[in-house]
Image (cartoon, rainbow, N blue to C red; front, top):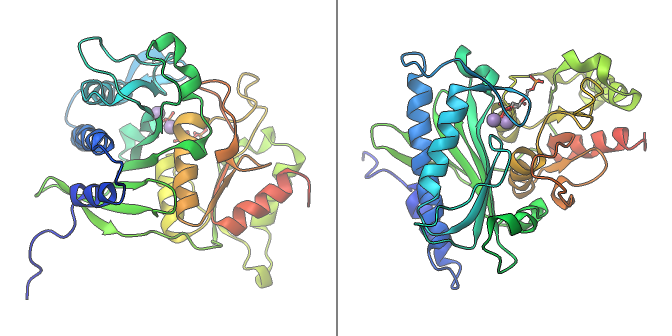
Length: 343
Ligand code: AHG
Ligand code: MN
Ligand code: MN
């Protein structure tokens, strides 16, 4: 008999999660619903990017000292517009905005905080390669409401996230998220004909060890000895330990991460001395490393800065960068032994 209905929608899944929490008010559910609307709009723009004048750069440089693509700005604005009116947030933090984003006074404030990378993988926008949106959600700790006094509430360790995940705009559009605390990682695929995200990857688990290493080898000359030794390890033939690993690097963190989440492997963006302004490498703790670190932990993997868990780092600044080793637990623990000098 043909399968009836559409299966489990993201709405059903979120409501099921809400029902597990007697204290839930539905505010978090509202927040996720509107975030999903923003992602659907971004997905539509990404998928028609080649046809509209939405490609290319704005000619501006952002706080990250990077060329701002039109889709970066568009995605940032869509998320802010969808999030600011729901009455669940006290503020937002975006990769594209130097300071915290306040909630306009005409809207009520709430107790959640969302930090996000509105569009990850910008360099791939014009060449039709998968890109994504990354988000992390925290609960405010203080009773502050003034935007100038909320930074302490934002700069919480990644382990404090009440939810984290990403959207990937690729051959299909997917949402992958977790609400932490052992609730697992679940993937939903957007069915354009229905306009809904439907459960397609329930309780994703990453293999304990992979066969893929993912790093930009072009940074080779800027790595220290320990990093070079680690990369050599993955490239050296040793049948017994299943080496060499296969090299895969897309240049969109979300795409490289998603492949490794499903197949196993390790993604690395090590510290390098390429740019004195960025000694800890390129990736951002709050809007890239922390959200993905919670997802990978809930999927049975691990995320490290080379010396310890990403999720334990006490953030100092909204846009601080961090070396990132993330993926299969055994591979990341091995990387940590190399980088911290135990091998
Ligand atoms: P963003 O587009 O949000 O700035 O992120 C780009 C990041 C990440 O997606 C990717 O892993 C990394 O930049 C690639 O950097 P390199 O080009 O230096 O390898
Ligand atoms: Mn990014
Ligand atoms: Mn970005």
